[in-house]
Amino acid sequence: MTSIVISGSGLFIPPHTVTNEELVEAYNAYVQKFNAEHAAAIAAGETQPLPESSSEFIEKASGIRSRYAMHKDGMLDPDRMSPNFAPTMEGGEPESVTMALAAARQAMEQAGKTADDIDMVLLATTNHQRPYPSVAVEVQKKLGIKGFAYDMGIACSSMTFGMISAWAAVRSGISRCALVVNPEFTTPQVNLKSRDSHFIFGDVATACIIEPEETCRRTEHAYRILSTRQLTDFSDNIRCDGNYTDHCFDELPEDRPYFIQQGRKVFKELLPLATDFITEQLSESGLKPADLKRMWLHQANQTMNMFAVKKLLGRMPEGDEAPIVLDEFANTASSGSMIAFHRYQEGIEKGDKGLICSFGAGYSIGGLLVEKL
Ligand SMILES: CC(C)(COP(=O)(O)OP(=O)(O)OC[C@H]1O[C@@H](n2cnc3c(N)ncnc32)[C@H](O)[C@@H]1OP(=O)(O)O)[C@@H](O)C(=O)NCCC(=O)NCCS
Image 1 (cartoon, rainbow, N blue to C red):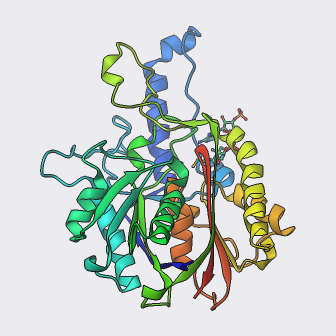
Image 2: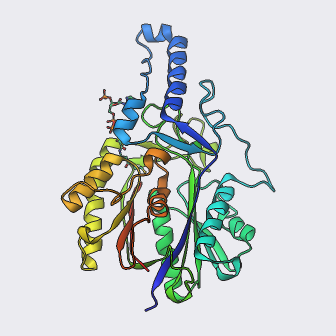
């Protein structure tokens, strides 16, 4: 059976940084205004006062210090509390396309591929900016790639599942070389008026090239895919209900368009699912966690990753064994493990093994066990 490789990756970082302090200042200004405006109802016990947020809580509870945003304008305005940007009209380019193109070009450059080498574009994301025409097809057209393209998504595991779909397509001969793009334009889905979730997400895009080993020309950043594994187990502890039917309803809850989660439940339920998944995937290849040079894990919560590694290795990670990027990027939905992969390849030598693994909404878990060429 042909061996398949990830031959290059790309990372697009949006133009604006938003720190915890900036977010908290805007949120607390919003809260003070709300409480002042509802002072009478609060005093009468008819309305609950809103509690303030804190940067210390955010960093301690999640590990997040900052995030990137495509549109910072409006996010920090207590009278608005949402990014301010224009809707895409006919002929205009959605943010997802701009982001995907930038990440894709880097991945192509790293792998030494031109548009003519690629025949499949898979756009994997949690946040689909429009239902159709497929954003993937616009990316394909703008890169000058022939063949076919499509969108897919399974929330937090969209990118790993996308890479596994590309691996399967290349392996079976459906594609000779696939580009997987992963724009996560998450900030519009964040409820900036919710203390529980206003700090969670940031925008980013990643991309990678997947092809047979025999066509791989640049091995500097190339990894052989040794095994793939996917798991889904339904839970609505992380959800978003907003969709195209919304205009049909006379009344809808205010948080309808936003990301909502039961963070503590998710933490407790997902952690054992993820560690069992990783143990099983490794043992299928006759490996143990200690055989991995690097674990490029999902980036939702730093403590969760530390617990996972401790459970797997029986000790805390050392150096870059399980790198964290969420301090800089926050949770980037399905991009986290690929940001870590793209950024943390130093010190990896030919034959070293690593695991790219996502875990999150669905629940969904995706793993690619790789070996450096
Ligand atoms: C979201 C998350 C960071 C919250 O951390 P947590 O420790 O579970 O915090 P909780 O929501 O239980 O809140 C703890 C307390 O802090 C308070 N709190 C919540 N948000 C706060 C904020 N922004 N500032 C200050 N206090 C806050 C809560 O009200 C609660 O107070 P109480 O104990 O008086 O009731 C954490 O649960 C998490 O990351 N879970 C995993 C999520 C995940 O993997 N999701 C995958 C999505 S891709």
